[in-house]
Length: 211
Image (cartoon, rainbow, N blue to C red; front, side, top):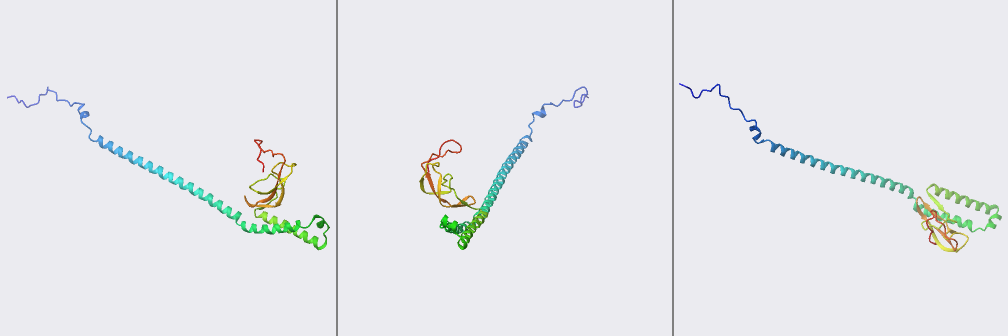
C-alpha cells in the first residue's frame, strides 16, 4: 500500500520568496525616526540655550568693562577736581597780590628802595610761588592777550576798535582766567579787538564769524 504522506525524494522542497522579507513592514522604523526627531529637537534646544547663555555672558562682560571704565574715570575726576572749591578760594589771594602790584606805578616801583622795594619783591615772589603751587595741582593760569577769542575759555567784557590786529583777537585782559584739568575754573575777562581783518582759519576752509 502506497503511503501518500511520504515525501517524494524527487520532489524539490518549496523555496522561500526573497522579496517576502522586504515586503513585510519594518515595525522598528517609525520608532527610530521618532527617537531621531526627539534627539534632534533636544540638540536644537540645547544649542539655542547655549547661544542665549553666551549672549548673556558677553553682555555681562561688556557691562562690567563699561562699569570699570566709568569707575576709573570717576576716580580720576575725583582726584583731579577734588580741590576745585579750594582752588577758587585761592584765586582771590592771587587776584589780591596782582592788584597790589598793579597799584604801584612803574615809576614808583623803579624808584622804590629799602622797605618798599623789599615788600614789592616779596609780593612778586609769593605770587610766583602761589601760581607754581597751583600748577603742580593741575590749576593753570590763562593769560590770552594776543590770542584768538575762545568763548569756552574767555568772557568778552567789551570791544576795542583796533584795525592793527585780526578781528576777534583778545587785545586786553581785565582778569586772568584759570583752568583745572580740562575744565574752566574761571574764564578770563577780556576786551576783544574789532575793526581789523578777519582771521584766516587754520584749514583755509572759510572765515570765522566776527566776535
